[in-house]
Image 1 (spheres, rainbow, N blue to C red):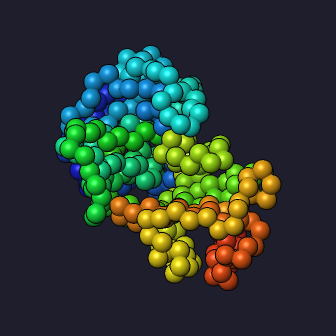
Image 2 (cartoon, rainbow, N blue to C red):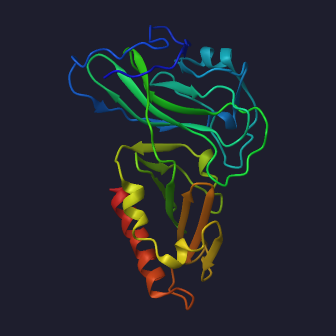
Image 3 (cartoon, helix red, strand yellow):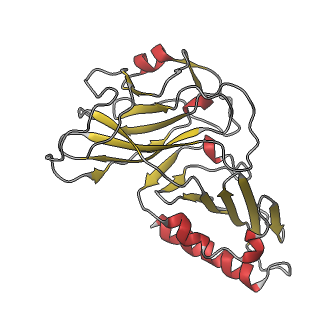
Length: 286
């Protein structure tokens, strides 16, 4: 495996890679997936010095976190716990460097390890076709927690499709998942009606092709709503609850709410789709 590495801003005690290093030769056994948790660090922390170039940081203690970040009151809509258990976890941050407009992003997609090293796979994206951007300096970043390790950590840039689907059920119990073509995210402790998914912690399951597969089940009448929001029936979280669907394609975001009770405005196709979402969530919860 031979890939371009990010430069590392070292924030921990053991050695790692530098720019343009090659991954070690695959002589250390089979790679297996490493569990990781998405962590919305920016809700409670601001980096003290913006990184103008692509970089990665790895933080293994509260002291190091305080050294490089300033804590502030939660600035997000979603309630957020700023605490990290560094006894069990490391914080990994990835940075794209300075961009001249909004619309850029960076995302960790999977993490694997063998007997010798850990590899963090990620991709970057620019503004999508038709997306309105603002000419201002931005510094895209992504943060995850991984289990504490003594292995060196390497970073591998890949190419992925940014489009995704969020499905959920809300009411007495809230269950929400994001389907990508590179993994599945389970959002944690989603509050009814607060669907700012970039502000929630999540756990990731590595599985390819879920977005493309589930997209085939979306009715034409919903696909034709591209960029709009529509509610079928009157889903009441305090009573019968409902089903949630969010489709991201390029710069377009379509949001759908469907009453759990079959209502006159739900076509046969929409009812079947509602069932497909519920069935998929049952499978994802197993």
